[in-house]
Image 1 (cartoon, rainbow, N blue to C red):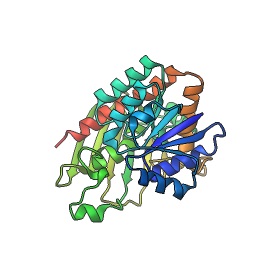
Image 2: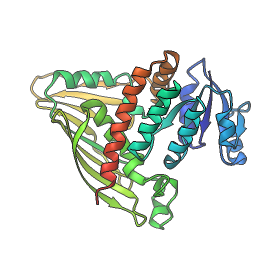
Image 3: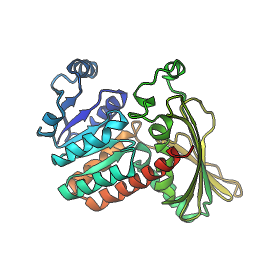
Image 4: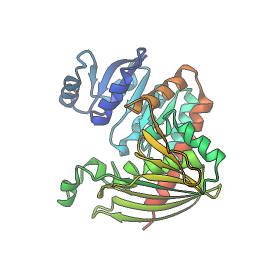
Length: 320
């Protein structure tokens, strides 16, 4: 199965590293606006036989079976729309879009053209998430606290009022979308749709979010409290609460390790680690299964989670 990439950042390298474990995949095309950028990128990762394309329309007309889109967030919608209209399967880096109407349009387009579309959010695709879902099903879960505070390597530029793509209002939208998508999407995957949202945001001078505090009330009554920022670092984990039990999640972006605790029974905490060090492996596995099995029912299940996530992120973004 031939595939192409859009983007030359670290996340594409991570995707390619995970893709190496799938013998059926062949990396045939690297798209970049500048030839020199793609050439440097391919040289660094030692892919000498991958073709470089600098025209999106040429990519859309190519013979690749799917495209991994990892361009700046604000370009996702138009690029995915072009590719879906050209009957390409698309795995779209998070956040899929900035607007609910855009991701709903892309979903309709994928179903109409019988091609697969999936958002690449690592945390919701790991196999071990079934353990979390089983815990929630069999215990009286009432609330969760999700913390995601990652001090950005670009804060020096931000403090000098230099706003690159991640902190650009049209391309990245800072913490509000680029980072907050992780806890919000995980909350929706685990606890379901949201009926009420409360939020407070701190913004940079260009109106882009740098810190978001939000409270989500799910349809089933579970309350998720989220703290997300790109201007802080953290030393505490996230937790799901179920009366005398709780789950402690070490890394909310990948859920590579979590612990089940019981405060009443005198049993040792159950520590669970995922089997794959590169968690993008799980999302590639799920995406390929959708393509191979023409599984549009499962595709729409994942896209409905994405749509609800973008809807909630829009609400948070539009508060103060």
